[in-house]
Length: 443
Image 1: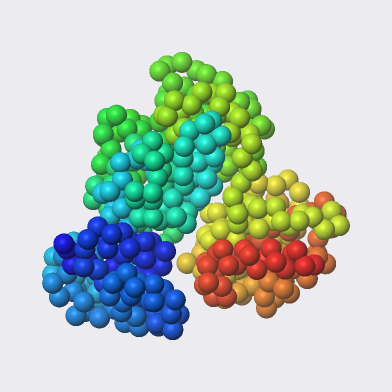
Image 2: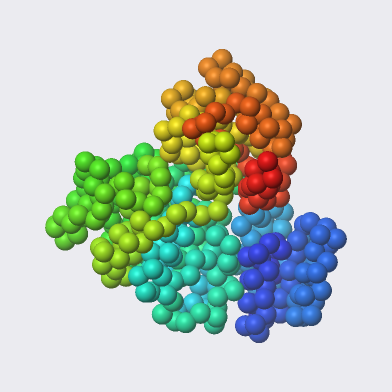
């Protein structure tokens, strides 16, 4: 029996605490938020004999502690983690802890953008082809919940954030994907170098029998190629010796020096060049599990996307409304704004993370007819774009959609792709997207 401390009462923290208890440990859970927000959870954990501490992460909890499992949202500069490090207490993520008890094959996906779409896409293609697969990790189902709860042949498709990967030691995916790397979460990681290193930890324990899929066209990723023992395959819009690429609108796979036609880009179920990259990366991942090109084509053409990522909500008077609430950074919004040929009324704003909107200038100039700015970042968005495009500042999403209906015409698209975090007005991007859809559906 170990004395285990779990920090953070989010989904992954609670799942880790329950798993640690099932494994026979003495478990405590601490959360800095007030107990009043977790009344039902406290009752549940107390019944399981998990010691609960809310309102402050007290340093006394480190006494006799042998293992800390930390939730993704706990920053490394948190006092309790600094003290635990000084005491040489082992600190790992929930992903690392759960993987110790998992024998299932793992496909792990990381990247600044596209993780959720690619994770869901891989799960869909595998299941559509008759394999057993389940998406988990950062996508919503903690790996800890799956320990002893899935058949051993089920493939776990794990969305892995930089936070989770930052504290792994033995996590070992058979197939790993790094989709892209752009500046994000730098307040957590401190430097771009540290952020890149956290992403590369996905391949830390891979061997020569394993596969690492990399985006050859991502500038930051390509300039920061770190070590791996895995076989590497590339995704690109130009020909590559090993991997998958496009030529003249056709997707090809180069395997064992043999070029194979996969499918036309136009037949993919998801729009936009970013989703072409996601789809090609998914194709390489599932081929490692012996899917035929025919099965891959079928799955990639049928998959229509995930909630809050370029999600079509409704058409009103010929105007399409699109929910892209998951676009929490500038890079994700760039992909959204270039995905459509129709004129766009863009709703943007929220809480920024040192956003550089100049990266959007060209795509806004080409594709956006007007901009509606909300949230803490409304002034910065307005000031950056107001000399080039019609810009309107509003108080909230209700007003934003009222103005959008006035701005848009038949054939236009109203795209809610915030380029910002949600925490100024909403609990998370899911809550923000649900509110957007609720307003659109009651117009």
